[in-house]
Amino acid sequence: MTSAKTLTATTASIGKTFGLDQVPDDRVVVCYPPSGHPLVPTVDKHHHFDRELLCRLLNFLNDPAGDAMYLTGPTGSGKTSGISQACARLNWPMSSVNAHGRMEFTDLLGHHALLALLPGEEPTMQFVEGPLVTAMRHGHVLVINEIDLMDPAELSGLNDVLEGRPLVIAENGGDVVKPHPMFRVVVTGNSAGAGDDTGAYLGVRQQNIAAMDRYRVVQVGYLPDEIEVKLLMAKVSGMPKDVADRMVVMANHIRDLFTGSAEGGEGQLSFPMSTRVLVRWGRLMMAYSGSPSPLQFALNEAFLNRAAPEEKAAISEIGRQIFGASWGKE
Image (tube, rainbow, N blue to C red):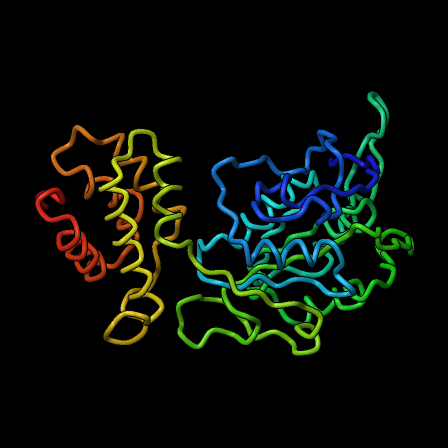
């Protein structure tokens, strides 16, 4: 069970908190003081904040003005990590939920369970608050990932909550929860609520336009090349820069083939290489450095073994073109 401790909001300098140059000290963002709250994310010191995305996130966190925020973009582009790392530096507790096709609005509210309130007591049926109720009551950020997999009819249950109205929990005897002033809702998705025409993301649904009208929509893309190279080298000990450079080139080529940005049209590959996979590839490559073909050997485990044979062959050919002799033999 999560802590029920109520925190007191404060403000912090944006420039100092996020290490941003040319931001005046009087530019502040609402936050919490350090508390050790278990729902505050852990700071990733290597995380790179895109300044435009960070600006939009902080503007929203400062004053949502009755809105929620919808972060949309391709797999692994940093949607969840962006809000998570912002919360980590602002000491803001964050409840994260992964949506799915069978998810119901009541899953966010909570459920009844047999609980013993004190050691040795006989268990009784108690209502256990769900992530939405906890976030509303205590001023947390509620993050719902893959929101476009959720049934639009169920998602519409959030409409009144997003407009700042109290939540009435019929399942808990009509308990009324008023939204804490620091309560925020951020959702992520691979589409922008209009469905997926490419067929790349199975299960994505078109969302109700009345529900979507309550969101600020922000597009999130992959990191710039030079930033992704630095991140790869920071997260993978001993990574040579020339290898990191070419790994990022290969990742971007695969992404272009997935999104249709490359010559030849859209959908030439069925999945992209995320930054997460890129780092995994790098770590495995260094671990297998004694093998005959460490780049290929590591890539198979990190990425390629889930690809269809023709896609695996195509990506391997890209690797040979980019890495040359260092790619090794099949």
